Amino acid sequence: MFSIDNDEKLDKSTFESTGGHTLRGLGKNRKKNPRKRYSIWSLIGVAAVALIVGTILGRFVVPKLFAIDDTKKATPAIVTTKAYDNPTVIFERAKEADKMISVEMPYCVVERMTKRSRFFDLFDIPFSESGYWMKFVGTIEAGVDMSKATMDPVNEEGKTLTIHLPEPETFGNDADLKESGPLEGTEHESVINQLSTADTIAFEAECKAKGKEEAMSQGLIDDAKESAEKNLRSVFYSACGDKYTVNVVWDGGAVGKEQ
Figure 1 (spheres, rainbow, N blue to C red):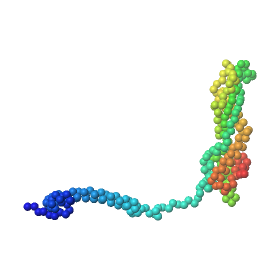
Figure 2 (cartoon, rainbow, N blue to C red):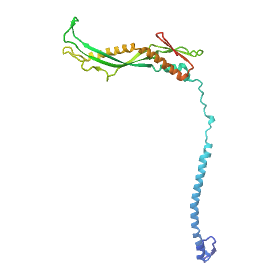
Figure 3 (cartoon, rainbow, N blue to C red):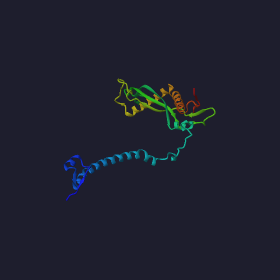
């Protein structure tokens, strides 16, 4: 009823249990298990091969296929003019600073503030005097208004730059509020002639004016000229080295030459 075949591929246990023979149906069922194991290992092998091939394509093949030809890129223009080395350009940029603060000088003024009432400007009214001693400390700055500066055409033959500057002027006169104020024990105020805020403001303005006079007498403007010339030459030296000699001509007629 059943045909018996010789199955040399069966494992030892199956071979012994069947006496070297098996039914055709049993042989078919036995062959299914190796096919399942072979399918799993095949998937693992295919995945590994795909991974390796993908890596090779992504690393070596694809970049070459889609590589950008650098020779087709636009070649940037070569800048032959060095703007930072051009004296005219350097001067214009220095002018953009608007004001070149050259020096600042502190000062201290001690003055007596006095207020009296007079009778028809004929004589002082007795017991009408009010006032105090004031210590006024401040700092005044002086420099050059660069918007008014000019430069002659560059003398390339003599390698000389001639720059005309306006006379220095004061740009600030600030009080040190921590150090300034009435001296203790010197205040006196009359009942009939009391001090007002306007009196104090006017007196502080007088102190500022005297502080400016003091600074000017100590050579503030001359120091500002010297500092402005030094700063201006330093700008050109930083950009051009010692290629040019910088001469400064002041509106007042004084000429400052590089030493």
